[in-house]
Picture 1 (cartoon, rainbow, N blue to C red):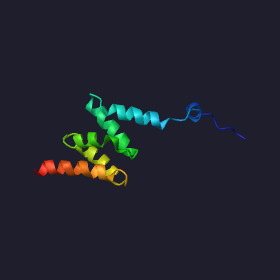
Picture 2 (tube, rainbow, N blue to C red):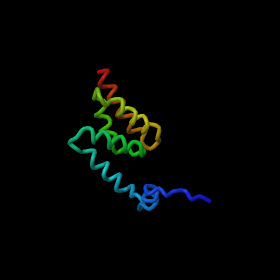
Picture 3 (spheres, rainbow, N blue to C red):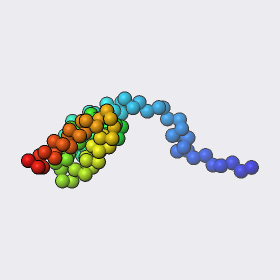
Picture 4 (tube, one colour):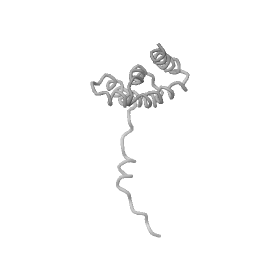
Amino acid sequence: MAREPTNPNRLARDHQPPVDLGEITDALVSALTSEHADLRLRAAVALAKQNNPLGVDVLGAFLRSEDQANEALEALLGLASNPTSAGNAAEVVGARLDEVDG
């Protein structure tokens, strides 16, 4: 019976230590205050994908950006589907709509 060749990448992946999500979340929260706008947006979007509303204010600020408004809005809409963060997301989107209308 022929043996299947071993994939060294798979072996390395299988033997990785578990990822500490707390450390990742802490790094993303720290990135929310970066001087680099793209890093702030990436961090806020990543937090939103974890259903974490800590980046909601950053996402709200990006609603004013012509280039990144759609991405920020998508992340906010994702948060709006989560009962624990829906209120925060709706508040930020509502505030932006008031700015546009006012």
